[in-house]
Amino acid sequence: MANKIFARCAGILFFVVSGVILAACSATAEPAEVSVRLKWLHQTQFAGMYIAEQEGYYEDENLTVTIDSVDFEQQSAIEKVLAGENDFGLTSPEALLLARSEGKPVRAVAVIFKLNPTVYLVTPDSGIETPEDLLGEKVALSPEEPTILFIAMMKQLGLDLDQVEIVETTTFDLYECWELAPVCPNYSTNGPIILDQAGEEYNLIWPSDYGVTWYGDVLVTTEQMIEEQPEVVERFVRATLKGWQKAIEEPDLAVTTTLALDSQLDEEFQTEAMQRSIPLIDTGEAPIGVMSEEIWQNTLDILLDQEILSEPLDLEQVYTNEFAEGALE
Image (cartoon, rainbow, N blue to C red; front, side, top):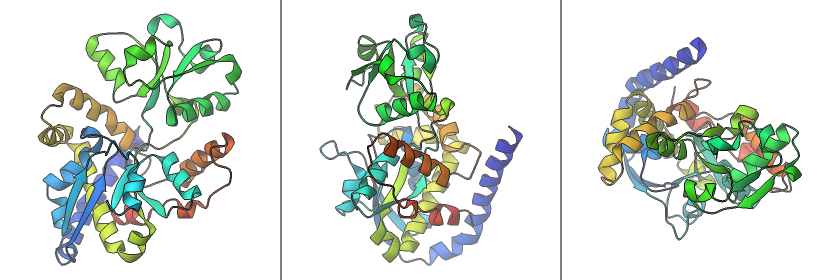
């Protein structure tokens, strides 16, 4: 615990010092207009960017930034970035790896959620507490990430997937899902909050507790952007991570900044969601934004094992820490 606290404080100190040193340089940088595409509608999941805008961190970098919420007709932020509609996008690690396997020139420049928030919520009367208890039980799974992580978790523990009855679900409603099976996928920043606010009991299974390391939101841009405008990428990443550091230090500010974008959001829910997001963003093991080769390799190995990818990838083409680490200099 002491090491984690030290690492977190060190990260804060780096940001303070770097802010002073870089202020003069940023003031003389060429002005640029950029946009970023979110994975979903406005909520505290993206509060670091809202703060970077409100607190003037983007302006300090001579950037004018447009923050676009998800386009439900084309949900892939990667496709938006490749089409030139946005300069940056937030996406999942598997979506990025799949894009790279198809030769699409996009690369991660920072990670926001270092721990994936995907969990499996279990009805309290089922008697299920661990993955071993899932054998002989029914589990509802939605496509893509929740299924990938579930299979990886079971394989990691050497458990026979054939002994689990998997039911496909596409509902976002936890209670509807529990009508299908006693185990349902959800996010630690969503379902558990709903149940806690309702005073209901539940059990929770985290894949990360069983050796499945997997990022959540990663920030991506094109190879062309990195090659032709590296200073803009650097400035955007620096301001964004500064915004996230501020959100971690002042979660109440993160909530009020988010509510300013959508006053219909539930303040109590967003406050709790932000609190539960902090340890997923700032794990204390490395500065926020900086990515691990080991985690990217684990993710790639899982996709290869499940035959979602057919061939290995050069991870140097998948991500770079150049900008996230540069934000701390």
